[in-house]
Image: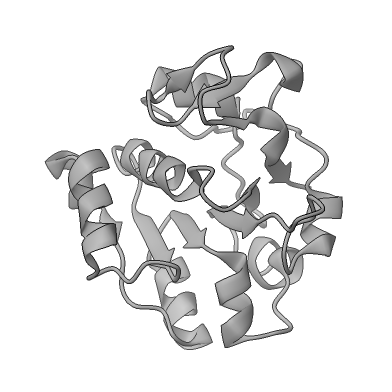
Amino acid sequence: RVKEYYKIPNSEIAEFLGDIEKKTKESVAITLAGAQGSGKTRFLFQLMETFAENYKVGHASMEEHPDSALYLSKEDEYISDRSYCNISNPEIETKAQLDKLIKENDVILIDSFAKLRKIDKNIQLDEDLRKKYDGKLFIVIYQLTGNGKMRGGSESQFDADKNRYQNRPLNELEFNIYRGELNHKQENPIEAKEVCFIAN
């Protein structure tokens, strides 16, 4: 059967993420995990920019309020006028608001899962997001604890160990967030092993 894949205009991000299937039944979920200050939110803005060129993007920014100076400075730095019109970033304080954001958009970015758990302590990435909605792409930030575990998401960490959309060896891939490109130097990268996919 012919499968459809997400169109990612940024070639560096496209190479880093691999070919991501655009599913008709259920959805695909990517988890971004890293320590505090590792640049996860900045990388999320770069993903938002590139996906918004072709898709409607919903951003649940629960770490930085959408009207805050911190948020707006990243918006100015990373989001183009062309992509801006395809992005919605309402304040998310309830499950109903999150549900509306998901239903109205193709790609949903959540920062972060720990804050999502403050709305509903029992929410699960797999059951309540990936399997509940069809044809969506979820990109969700997780904080790493001191011992390297995903805060508030041990089940997600277990499921996300399988990177099914990237054919290259993960130890060959490293993305420099501040330059917005792949590299092999240790300059504030999110390594590919921290970008996980949940599918099937």
